[in-house]
Image 1 (cartoon, helix red, strand yellow):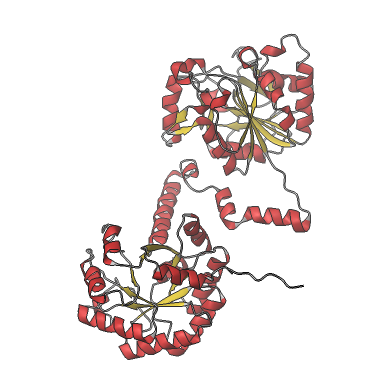
Image 2 (cartoon, helix red, strand yellow):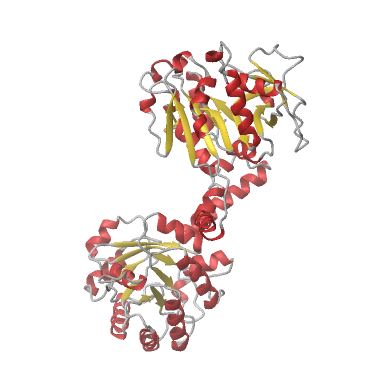
Length: 551
């Protein structure tokens, strides 16, 4: 049986890199220095990656003086090519030695799927161009041409690219010498010329491009003359711009800021919500693919968490702001309240969300959310809304009010709690809330922040601060975690409460009290602030500060 031939086989990475160099459009590639940063660059939409010598050495913590061996660099490149599909151009310094080192380098790069290498005409071991560059000697042009020829003769893929980087302008030579070397390197087989400059203006680069006359593609690295509009490069006929070291610099700045703040405050609370979540790191590492592979190959199962958001009310205290939309769609610092909740869910790996809507349910348009409507929202309470979502009950779920804002750790800790049913109680709010209708909680023991893993259970929830015996221990924030047998307990409670004549007026506190009265252990997770419910115009102002980390 004859198999149909693949008429258009996919282009190799080397062919795609060559296509970028020869493209009539100005192309851009961005620096990366390991597998994680390479994936981030690709996801940002860049068509190619610059494996910077400076950044690669920096992530090892060594100087940009060939202190990291070429084998160590190639090992990192293997991780980078494994997790990306776009071509990589390696900053290969001087080729790591003579022509023979260059031949071996090219073969090893091709084996790892690297699209090309850029080598510079300096002596091995090299030094960074921006450190006393004018005092650095250049390689003999004929010797460098031999290195280019050796590399081209060693490649198996005709499209593998060798870019010749000219350091003449860095080392204090004139334009004539830069052009002379460029032409020699072109004739030796270089696929493109990288002209380097340390000036803060692009004058030398533009002069070179004009006098070069597009004899071969020109690549530039505008690290020093970064304020130049890119349109100027287009008019000059530049082929490719390399953003050469900005990922490593951004990473260092962020790490320094976080490290200093954590050291000063001895806390993670002020930084946790502004850095990448652990789940985002898992995503970049391909954790989801591994889960799918486990299901496919090993019969593995992973417990999925389902979120149920009760969001049927309008929010009358917010007046005309909720005339055309429910409270959960009000923007907080530019993002709808419900969108913020869904984002918090995703940080914790929760991708299944059911929203029980009512008032202006048609205005809820958050992607990936299932909307269930409580048509009798105007005359019923939260019990009826929760019953509307009963078809979506899961063995692992979190139930919460739609007007909540909270720090990420609160949901994380609730999900990690071992109890079948867990309530979140704020011990700092025992004296009363800033706004809203409080649900005061009486528990088996008061909060003791010096003790962890205490087994505290709920005794009662009441809106009257005098509704229990003695002072309450805090305020229930409107978040409930249910797992395992707790799902059946909750279903039984709903069934029994719906038999009451006043069931239309019942809310979640009645459900919790019913569970307690029937001997079901409702565990308590104490927190100390770091949350807010949005019930009034004043709350909206506070919510803006809260999401900006100022409250």
